[in-house]
Amino acid sequence: MQHYSGFGLLKHSLTHHENWQRVWRNPTPKKKYDVIIVGGGGHGLATAYYLAKEFGVTNVAVIEKGFLGGGNTARNTTIVRSNYLWDEAAHLYEHAMQLWEGLSQELNYNVMFSQRGCMNLGHTLQDMRDIERRVNANRLNGIDGEVLDAKQVQEIVPVLDCSEHARYPVMGASWQPRAGVARHDAVAWGYARGADAHGVDLIQQTEVEDLIVEDGTVVGVKTARYGEIRADRVGCVVAGNSSVLANMAGFKLPLESHPLQALVSEPIKPILDTVVMSNHVHGYASQSDKGDLVIGAGIDGYNGYGQRGSFPTIEHTIQAIVEMFPVFSRVRMNRQWGGIVDTCPDACPIISETPVKNLFFNCGWGTGGFKATPGSGHVFAASLAKGEMHELAKPFSMFRFHNGALVDEHGAAGVAH
Amino acid sequence: MFHIFCPHCGEYREEEEFHAKGEAHIARPLDPDACSDEEWGEFLYFRKNPRGIHHELWVHAAGCRKFFNITRNTQTYEILEVYKLGETPSVVAE
Image (cartoon, rainbow over all chains, first blue to last red; front, top):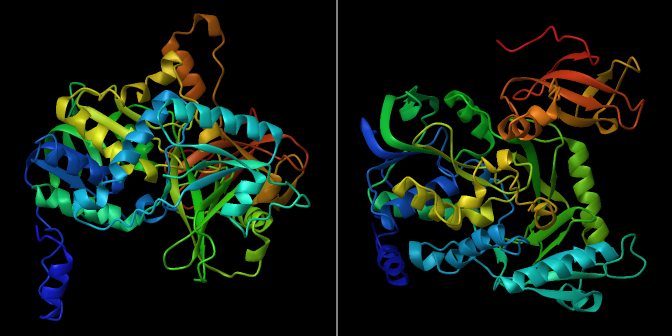
């Protein structure tokens, strides 16, 4: 792997940047791997990277039906935070947060992680009680957090309407200073480059048509392009399509796939230097380094795999944004798109063994998987390497929906977490 | 944006009047106390979530407030059939 540095940039400028090494190979798959990861998004690539780098399993293939990082990794609103209420979830997301903090150095790839803070607004007394409870829980778990009153909120975000005349006046907020945003594509590319350098085969444009299950044990996958590819263990990290893959293996998951939309505006001058979310008016916004406002809100209510949503949802989103930021009312929106999120009944992921031996699923991240990318990949890699679930993943077994040990994070998940 | 035919009102109305309520035809176990944890968990949480033809329950929330079923393709979003509760769908997946 070619090391990236300022000096390298200078050196390559002498040859007009025409001699950069390819970032990853495009190999033909072998007949057999130790581990196959289905799904080449952020979580799948992170899993492959940590498998090879940290757990010494290098005979690994990532099989992706489209191109790397072309699904929800390319479609999210790039927010990273770890202020979840329950211990199980807080530990998992905080694990991810700590990996984020060293990720650009770790990958030698600038993921543009910017810890600009994240604010969750409270508009009612109950909002404020919930915020205080969550911030206190966060602090007990060693996660930074503060409760702000309306005046402090106004100081941090001058363009936010904190007046008493607002329809839903801002009463305060929870504030996580270490939260922020990261460049979503760079995360996928950085992990892909790192995994490839450690010998992982990244197989693109190859759709898995079936999982090969013999005597209750998965032994490989069937693809249209390369036929059967065998493996000792298979990990599925396919977000919205998880139920489709589970169906191939003959079981159901407690998931429903919904379209989740996001929008970006035309680029404007720097105006918003943090992330502002509101569960109550149901919208959130941040500003990218390029200057466009990145806006999101809730999912469409119906199931869908079409990677597009409906107009009423966009209208509600914009209503919420204009309610919070009247100054944005004349900003024009540039693009709008949808991704398919696999929502779980308790708003927590599934990182789990399955009824099929040697088949593992990492799914159910719903509307908030991006922030967990490094942690998710790391604990899933540890689980795939050992064949048993990592300590942080254990509470997120799919079988919690049988025994009732749900981890209800609807509050912290809030408006599309 | 869906245009949905409400079988109770007998009219097409806009999507915003309706709420999707999830998978249709999920029968509550007749004797919940006799269910195993697996059976009860399956009933409460586990769903088919198909990519393709899907039968789902909708409610005309800002209209007649009655429930009905829609058969819809979750990939193309095409509505294939609308039918009342208790009726059997004529369009089904293979």
